Image (cartoon, rainbow, N blue to C red):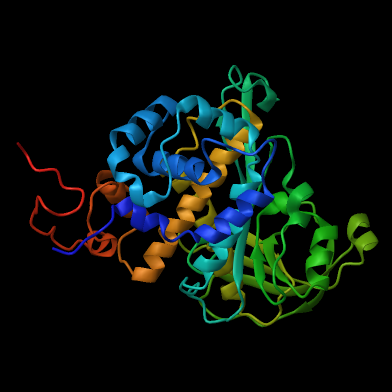
Length: 384
């Protein structure tokens, strides 16, 4: 029978070890680690994410129970006290930069966004991650409430996160919008929470298109009325000039205003964009696709461990969130590379049940039948 490492070991091979070690050296604080390393920390936390473990004791117990199968992982189980110390003191920036490396690999395999145009398409939004104020007093943002805010950009090629920033819950979206960088010619879609004329002007000057909803109190004058298609739900397609004080100070260029009535709900939306080439119905459909980032936030909160945290410090919380985002990219890369038809949720549940099984990873995810048991194969313990 062919030899196979555990499913977990095969999954971790998607992370280039030499790149990880170079990042670990660059993002180290304090004295040199003697009895453990950052790779073992990463392996322990990824195992906790994929197996649904909610405490350090649970992660340690699970690792000790599978200690015989850790040989090919290049790591050793860590005691919960040591793991807690690493999470609290070693910079979470290591996993932030690892997230960026994994995105670059994942983007090279991702499918297209489904539209006819070739421009890159991104959605931008933020979501609160609730924290207990009694356990995390530093996360206070309202009466009796605590939270952190995850600002995230979603690449519609494969629906994968390409950029993320963690901040305090009171931080406004417009304050961090300037931190996000996009290639020239791309299209960025966001809601009215990012209504910042200076940022809109910056995007336009960089050759980046944006699509958003118009503010209800926006002042403008119509410069041109464009022809409408029939039976498309369009109410108007105009070229406008903003006339408010803020827009005058920023010297904003002419914009396009599209008024659209959703045939399903009957609700009327008013969009503003600096793209004059795409059809008005395409502009409306682009904004409709912004809902994908809401689904992304919902998915990671339901399927990854970012509700029950393993530490109480800011660094520990950030470490766990960055690990969760890295796990998402690993699953997406696996799905794109193997061209799997299963959803990421189905993959997560299947991996949770088979994490330390010695089976080929891709046939497992494809749903191929399990090979017959062989007590002499690696990792199989014969019954006495």
